[in-house]
Every structure is written in C-alpha cells, then in structure tokens.
Image 1 (cartoon, rainbow, N blue to C red):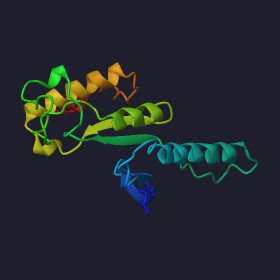
Image 2 (image 1 turned 60 degrees about the vertical axis):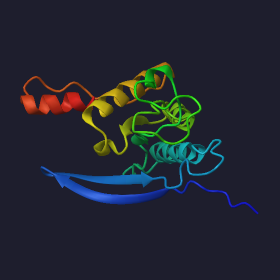
Image 3 (image 1 turned 180 degrees about the vertical axis):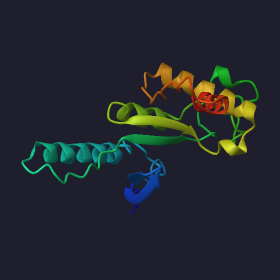
Length: 185
C-alpha cells in the first residue's frame, strides 16, 4: 500500500514590535509541498486554506459583533524557487546541461521554473500577493543570481503570473536604502 505525501499546514505566531508599533505576525508553513511523486494539484490544500481564512474573515465582518475580529487572512505568499529547476530552454544554453544529459548540473544550468512552480503561482496569484524568492541564493555567484532572476521574471511574465510589485521608495531616502530597494526588485 502506497503512503501518499500530504501538504501539512502549520501556523507559527510571533509578536513583534518595532518603533512602538506592535504587530502579530502569523507564519503559515507548508512542509511537504511538492515532495510527492505525483504532485497533481498539490497546491490545492494551500489554496483551500487561503480561501477558508478569507471566508471566515468575511463571515466575522458580516456579523453583528465586529469588535473583536481576528484577521487570519493570508496577505502574502513568499514562494521559494529552487536554483536547480527541472526545465531546459534555449536561454539556458550558456553553461547549462544539454538535452539528454543526466544530473542536476550547476546552479543556473536548469533555468526554467518547474511546472509545479508555474501551476502553484497561477493558482494562487488571484488570491494572495506572491513574492518569489530565489532559494539558496547565497550559494550562487552574483552573476548567476542576476541571470536566474532575469530568467525567472521572464517566465513569470510569459505565464501571466501577477507577483507583488514593491512600491517605489521615497525620494528623500538615503542612497544606500535606494540601492537596497532596487536590488530587491
């Protein structure tokens, strides 16, 4: 009998305070996502969870007693993209593995988003702000990071996936902050 891998959803609540502003931050983790042999619709439990939290908030807002409503909606999805993707495309030929090659290759050698990444982000981009993050970027050279970020952006645009757009920083910010802001984008 085959045991199926499930996407477990775990919540971690952290109270933080910065400059006198208190914030209760809830981190929702999804260990097991994408780990199964058959990942068909493995994003569904995540989408269902997001929808349930929204529906609960809507019910609370529509009720008579709205004083102590707790907002458990998911406002942002930080989506980690592996630097070792599974696709192969013409844009990756510079230093990539050729067709028919076996192995993971070097970072950036498989530059395309995995079908699972595309499917997940397409299913959720209408529900929540998605912030794609290149996982393990500290193991890559700055040139590899830049090349991969550009290729990932191109694919996200190609598939019509809407991601969170960082706002422009204020003109009165110092130059170091402006450079950090630009690097994040």
